[in-house]
Length: 401
Image (tube, rainbow, N blue to C red; front, side, top):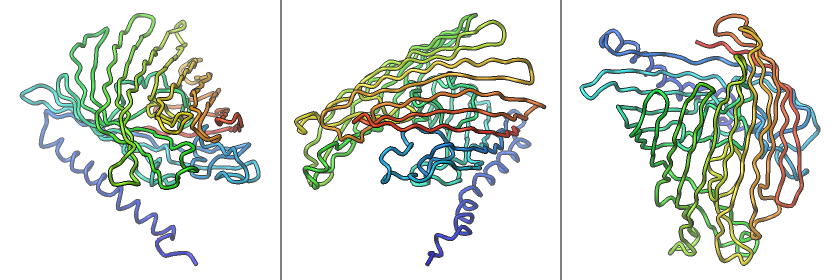
C-alpha cells in the first residue's frame, strides 16, 4: 500500500512550501524598488519544455538529461535497465531569478539570487527548486555561491540539452573572490572555495567491510584565473591547488586519515570565425580535480597495496562551433571527452571515460522565444573497458522573461 507521504499530492505541497518563500522575497524586492529609487532590480528567467525521445535508456532519475556516467552499463543490475526506447517530457530547466544593483558609500553593491527546477542530491529526479546563484559583489570582492573561479562558463555550447559536456570544468561553488586587476581587456581573480573531495573506497569495500574511507574537507581550495579579451575573442588561463583530505569514519580515531595535494590547469577560450561563427574550446588537466568536472571521475583512490591513497589524474577537452545563420536561425555542433587514469585499487565499475556530442538547429521566431531540435550522443566507459552509449533526439520550447 502506498504511504500517504509518497502520494503525488504531498510532493506538490512540498514544492509549494519550498517555492513560496522565494516568491514572497521577489514581491518584497519589487516593493523596495519604489522605496529606493536609486536601486535597480532585474527579474529574469525562462520557462522551458523539453520533449525527448531516448533511443536507448538512462538511469530513471537522470532521464531528463544526457549525463554519460548515468548510462546503465551492467544490465541487469543498473538503474534504468530494461527495453530500449522512451519518451520524456520535462520542465526542469525552467529558471527564475532576481539581480539587484544598490548604491552604497563604498560603491555599487551587486547581488544575485537564482533558482531552477532541476533537483539533484536528495532531490535527484524531482522537479523542485534548486539554488544556482546566491552572491553579493562590492568593488573587487565577491562572496557567495556562483561559477567557480577555475571554470569558464562561456565555453558552454549553444545547446538545449541540460547537463552539457562532461569534460567541462563546471561547478557553482561557495567562495570568497578577490579581483585585484580589472580593465576593459583583461582581469585577474583569486578565490578561496568550498572544498569537496570525491574519494573512492575501491576494493577496500570487499576486503574490510568495517572500513569506510570518506572525504574530509579541512582546507579551502585555492583557485585563480587570468582572462584576456581581444578582437578575435578571448583567452582564459585558470589554475587550482587543493588539499584532498580523507578519514575512516568507521573508527573513533578516524584512521587511516591524511591529506594529499591536488592541482590542475584549465585553458579555455572563444574564437570568432567570420561575422557569424564562434569556436568554443577547453583543455583541462590535473590530479585530484575530478570534483570540478561536469560529470564523472574520482579525486582519490587506493593504490595496488590498498594501503596508500593515490591522487588520480584526469584529462578533459571540448570543441564546439556555434553558428548564426541569420537573426532567426542558429546551429551548434561539437564533441567533448573526459578520461581518467584509474588506480590499481579501484573496482572494475569505476569511472574511466565519457564522450558527448551534439548537433542542433534552433529557431527564434520572436523576441524571447526559441524553438529547436537537437541530436545528442553520449558514451560511458568503466575501468574494466565495458562501455554503453545513448542516442537521443530533443525538441525544446523556451519562453524568456
